[in-house]
Image (cartoon, rainbow over all chains, first blue to last red):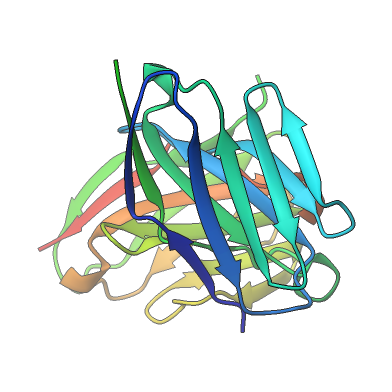
Length: 114
Length: 112
């Protein structure tokens, strides 16, 4: 089955710097890769996602890149702000063959220092 | 308001006493799922359902049961809870697999 590894487990940056979180997946059939943000005491919320037919997707200060050959994908946050501080989770699934079976990485705790 | 509603938010129970955590969504979503969240282990999928009467095991199904008799509801049943099931539980739903899951507010369960 699918396995998703996420690094680093913690990340501390200065406000205004960029942050990068990386994930690798094991199942080459995986074709959908969402990213979630979970603020302290709250539910995970979808912030961006990418399908396997796209190499990069951007939404304002957030971007995700996908390298299918290497089976890894990354979240990039530019011009970080204190409100970006949260735990970020990557996830992967093969939508066509496994439907709702979405496997998450272990999470990255991002701290943005003012 | 479009949402996934879980109840209860907090629950303390004793070992072996059967319990049910309810989950309901009002978005007519096909997919529903249960996750548990434990420190250092991220979100682990317990069960998921792609439609009414269709359920499948996730990565950690032992000790749990689910049912999907109606599209909107997906209850999680612990027939004989044990202390290792103490965790934060999230229900989630999605219209299609390519739209990601919308999560409920969570249920913090303590089994003593």
